[in-house]
Image 1: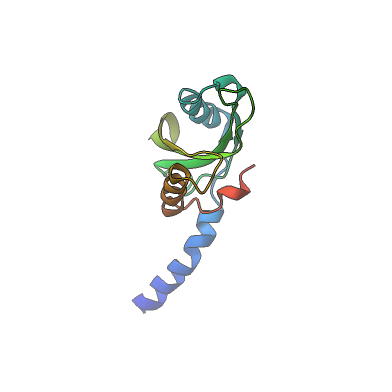
Image 2: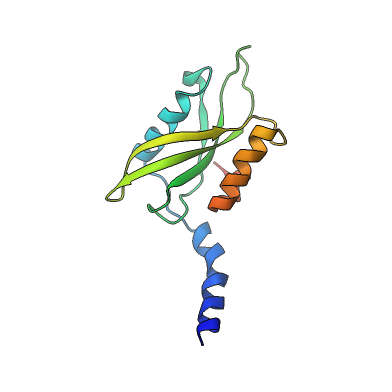
Length: 128
């Protein structure tokens, strides 16, 4: 009986991960501010968002950012991962763990995408 219940729960994990909560505007601002602090041209940053995994209990978040490089042109979509600090279901801070590059096959991007996949953010290519 326990095996059947466990099998059913495992079957629904991908479905619940795909149905995470959308970020609020305040949460997006906190996350984007931490990313902007790490890039060359903070004002040019354009973000693409994915739903939170596991509602507001997740301690990580992954998304995509495109910003201008030193030459003044947009570099292309780059994956990122941040650590989230929640207090009573309210996001208080985020800390950048890593930002990849527009070359998703680069070592930096592959590392970020691997950690994101492990955290449940396996569809960054669908970010909007």
